[in-house]
Image (cartoon, rainbow, N blue to C red; front, side, top):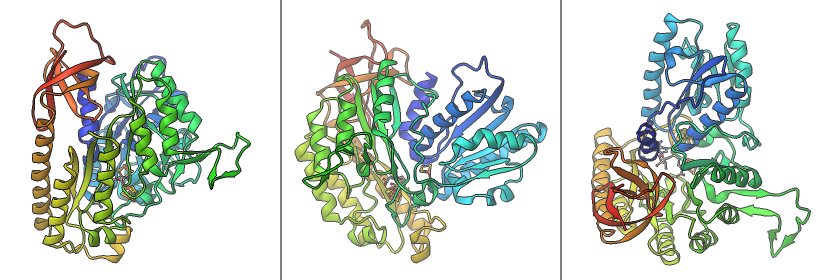
Length: 483
Ligand code: SAH
Ligand code: SF4
Ligand code: F3S
């Protein structure tokens, strides 16, 4: 039950700045205990698994109870102001425990650490360690120093670090689905976004280490991997161990593109599902779409963040595509992969957005018929292009009202999308018991829709594929029965 709840959080509230507290698989045999809580996007959750692996090697076991931890870590997100506020509040609670137990160390990890750097130590007096996303290998050293009373900061960003050689410790896993990081950083510079500042330059991880990790997961019983990056379509890795690096029709023969990587992972086993996130509309290639169409086990689902449906706003956002380009992309997806699930991210009330321009976003949502969206109102982030160049001039109540309209429309689109599935039969990968009832299974179809159905007398288990006929639905879930 526990795992499922957390699993749902990861998927549904991923971008809302929600936290989860990973749980120690086995804390016996470890001398010391650490507690880690993660906020923000899936990259952060994955990084926490890297951190757990690094700490395990140093004799630290994870605990679910921060009050008994020697080291309390909070992996932070800076994407919106509210995310940072949530983290400050949580830090206050940790600091209260530290006042009773001065030996406890508090470490701030992730994007907020990177954004605020040493300033965070001034602002948050009881914090001992500040460490950015590329510096986790130095965490044991910083902990050692902090134990002697010396505060530690390492916020160096790297052009190479991908943690390729570190096997993540799967925290709170359902044992069926896992995330595999394929690249770090982002070179895109969307004007609203803090990520290029907190995560640094884009770099791709060794393709062989990705395939090995996915293979290993498969051997351990996992049946789905999600390849993770801020902009997966720009994945590009050159295999230096292969001698033939000469240009062939303009392409480097030993280069691995994202399409190629997808294929490599898909070929591990036909029963290992492959997903990926996130695609940038300007970068997703026809080759990727054709690769998706070619392999049954590459899931027919694309998260294709729109941000705005208006070309002028898209330009201000530096998204580098137009309304028409985006529409053509959606059509191309529908042509090459009929029935493909599409979801989106939408920002309401970006700088100077007019009522008409907001309407363009709503119209685009209708056009794309998103199955699901993550929706936000614009939150100005210090240091970003937008903060420096444009005035955050849409009043808060207008932003919120526009967001409400967007949410209301998406709710209808989600419901309509689910209603279209009534009567259809889907292959569903069982992820675990339903949150609501232990008599039911919960899984997903290839389009990433949650499907709930009675276990009945069937002898299925987590990780099995079943054929499920959809009988009814809610806005968020398909309800059916095994056939
Ligand atoms: N790399 C991913 C997005 C990462 S951030 C991509 O390009 O799609 C996740 C989402 O948060 C973004 O897609 C955007 O919709 C939202 N977001 C980012 N910065 C924001 C800001 N300053 N205010 C509001 N929403 C923001
Ligand atoms: Fe941010 Fe844009 Fe990079 Fe996504 S692609 S992380 S929105 S800069
Ligand atoms: Fe947040 Fe950093 Fe991810 S700002 S959304 S945790 S990359």
